[in-house]
Length: 165
Image (cartoon, rainbow, N blue to C red):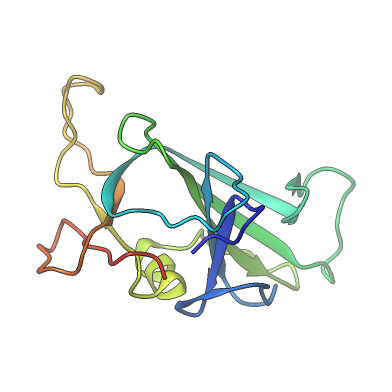
């Protein structure tokens, strides 16, 4: 449930949270609208249109690591953004996840399995079996997709997601 006067909801350690611990991975889902009333994201399958990644110093301003320098005492973040395809997702803008790194130890972005752990069972992620060649080249490629559905059986490649709580 997205609170009134907001456009996003945050998840950490498998549940929805109001605030996050910057020392543990977290994700947030952003909608296209801010509403005066609480918003519920309805069931559906949302195709990821593009994926963005960046190392940032501050998750509020999204300031890149390269601006202003940093020291090994700074907490830095590997940000991964799954931008939803507007044709399949009129309500959800993106799913953005953050992996914190400290002491100048950097690693990869969160994997789909790690994102799933952060999000919990209310939202499932999985690669799509194949994407139509109308929008992409003739190559068959796998991209993640988000599926928000009532609970049901899931194929290995296709996720099912219960409504966000």
